[in-house]
Length: 139
Image (cartoon, rainbow, N blue to C red; front, side, top):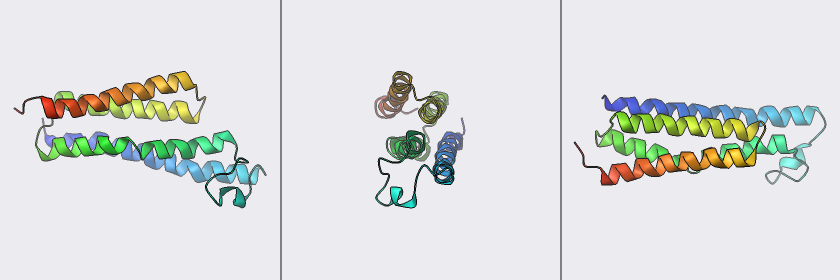
């Protein structure tokens, strides 16, 4: 398998992050135009006056800048060491799909149990990617 294939799931996760980033001002401006928030509500982050549906997008964006950093690192490690195989490629896409589903749940109906389940599954995939990298024999 061509090692550069691992760049596609990385790009997809970056795209998801940019989409969520774009939703932050969209939801903030909508709330402001509806009179639900004022500019000072964001002076020190987000005040208690910010409606949950506006805050959730920002929180989801922060989630996408936290643990996924380890995803980018493991993908780059696979790329640099030329150890991209079908399993790592499928796991990478699985991680991205789970993070996409997590984001969709988080910023829409936000069922906490379902969101936690998907989040935990994505973390297991990420941990497995790291474990396979260090414990699987290179070709």
